[in-house]
Length: 144
Image (cartoon, rainbow, N blue to C red; front, side, top):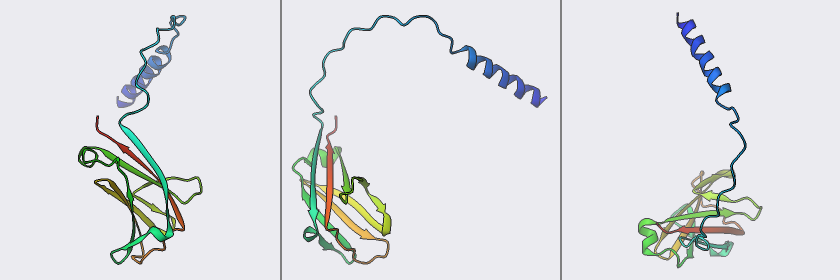
């Protein structure tokens, strides 16, 4: 009995699928153009740059940290906005952090008023070697 019910349900589904896609005629005329929006996104800002090996500071026993000034990280952003950070070793690959990368490199980020901090540690819980140059992108989005 169950087999007949399953077969009937499958048959009805197949019929509905193949008959539901019929063409109903020619498309209608194109609609009118909409009104122009604002130029760009006023709620978002970006900053790009790089951190040299000499700019890393030891933070605790096993972490390196770099502090990047960013005037777009206002109190409104700290309270209700969004800050995203991406890093690259300069090989055309960008990684969103936090991230665990090859070799056990752990990357993390946090932000405070007018600053973004990038932290590097590793799975071995030893002090990591700072990269020669680390490229970054910071995207700050204000709440609507």
